[in-house]
Image 1 (cartoon, one colour):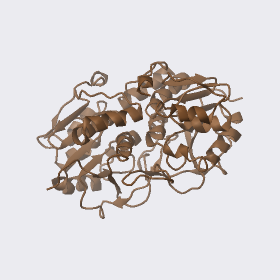
Image 2 (cartoon, helix red, strand yellow):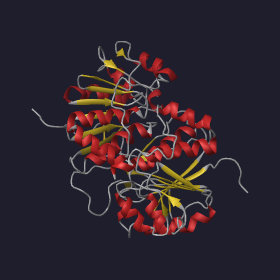
Image 3 (spheres, chains in turn red, blue):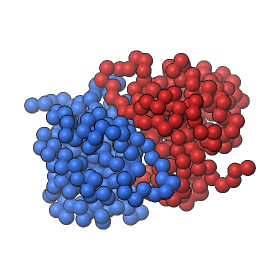
Image 4 (cartoon, chains in turn cyan, brown):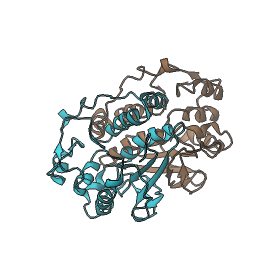
Length: 216
Length: 216
């Protein structure tokens, strides 16, 4: 059995992922990796760069960025310990995100932790792994997300929710608070505090402190 | 003369840029662009993907991501209105960042706004455009940054500083608060508030509220 904090982390990418859902958590992990060596796999259906702009119905004048994946879902390493699933407009494309949903379902049994940000929890819900579990999601998309997983115990008022080895966060920026909670839990509060100081980030350390529930 | 809020935005990339310095501001601009059409140029010395891991002295076990640029510094569009310069470990590589410094110097006279995040202000300082101006930077690197621009009026205690058409932010996450201030100023408080609600981001709207000055 593996012990100690996890070191092999994967991110499930798809067209139309939300940039900050990925780079909020990853920037903290990038900094952490200077003192706690990590491995990172960026997964997509192909090795082509993945855009934050969704394939379907892109808005004219919408800007985006393209991130280079390291592996395909088909050829993903088998030793992934932590899988991070972002949200974003692309999650509304049920056909495009089918490979992501299938990958979550197939990989979950061997994961140590599953983390979702924003509407990434809709993808996890569709895979069935959230059934019977407490989970949260983006406040502005909450009703749509709930319909993707009718058997999930959706928690509206939460910055993030941990249920066993599954952490789900509320919208976009909430992923940053979730990753700090995860770092504190797995790598120690000192490591989390150090990364936050380097990042000049004021953490929300209370998972029940959700300033955006009222905005829904 | 151009009027109205700016729409043509460029980011000056280099190996070893800090991911959140770029994607904190850009994610907010990505969301803004759905209601306020924008154009984005991601600049680098070549069109090869640019890594967040610095070329020199990468730490073993350090993870990073690769972003695809859209233009080279040499072939950058001439109509850039806003130039965003991130920081990161790569700023310590004076030779590698020389093209960035040269580009800032050459482009600044035709810019409407120059924005820097974290040690990005060290690159702007080296270009000379901050001479005689108020500016800030990352708290943990402040002494090094000050040495890059001895004629700059460095302001230690600041989340961000605006001096005319130049906005400089403190470390990493501070760039997010700076971009919201910029969006509020140029696109209106309603737009800034809407983007923050979508992002579930609690803004620090007071540029003099710097919780990390004491950490230095």
